[in-house]
Length: 81
Image (tube, rainbow, N blue to C red; front, side, top):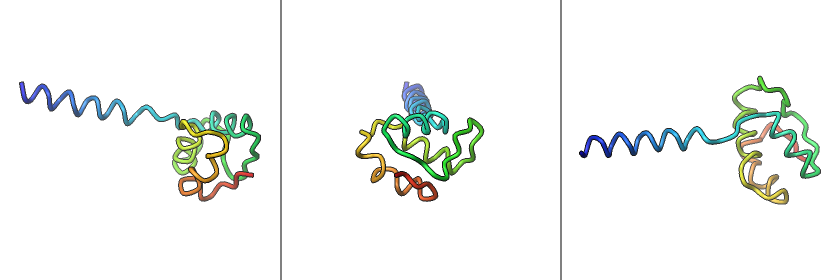
């Protein structure tokens, strides 16, 4: 029974870690909806890993007025105006 519980905990953790939306296209759409212009973020579905990290932050549950501050560390190569 302990092994079953351990497997379930690990499985749930892996499932939860894959829930972030890393779509750069979705991130560009979100920035546009919030009235921001972005410079440096690829809006392609085939963006690189750094852009995907930034996109995951932008696509998170932040309010529009929180995006710039909340995502500045993960979007260091992106300018959000």
